[in-house]
Length: 263
Ligand code: KIV
Image (tube, rainbow, N blue to C red; front, side):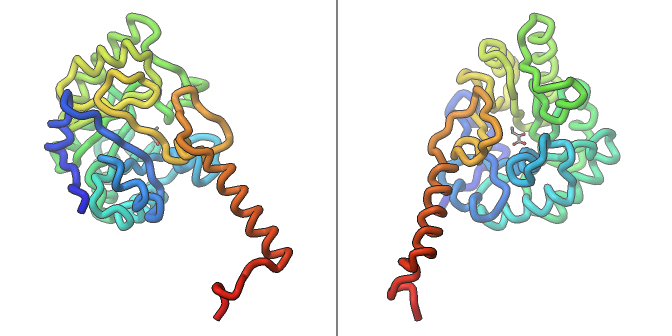
């Protein structure tokens, strides 16, 4: 039986044990990923790897709720974080209304929102209304169109200072942890050391409090592009294609089904 993480155990892990976070979008994969992960993120990256769109911006709250519910059903012992999609937390009232919908319609343990100091008042409002919040600072995928691309952060001392302010503002607002994405490794380490809550990196080097990867990236299933920070632990796309080709060949040559597959 897997022991489910809690906000308390996640916070206590800082400086003790790196946290393992991975994305999942459905019950099938969530169940497979659960034994080896501390937290499952239903990321809005599903809009790219699952729905085939060019970025995350068109993901809807209904989509996120559908996938989060599936993940919670498949991985009952996982701490599940639901990513709030673009445009659903632009002000306090929308943020709370939409986060409550996620909590009422799924058993997600937390939501995640992108932004730093500029989102601190919204995070504080959510936390004071019973919503557990995971922050997300650094490269913000939902800002891709506004910024004209995916921009690595922490390249100047002004950016470094802003990242520290972002992390501290999120912590003071009540977030229990945060993701830091696409940030120079030495800067991410400084940011992580500037707060008491866990800072989970993606493309932010090793000196943070844990790592998160998109499951379809690390399993080599997503073929459109591979960010520098992704390690492919298997070549999933080739494995799947080879297996399906094998099946196709066997159907055409009538090698499948055999006696043992027949009633
Ligand atoms: O949507 C997502 O999968 C994410 C991760 C990249 C952290 O936000």
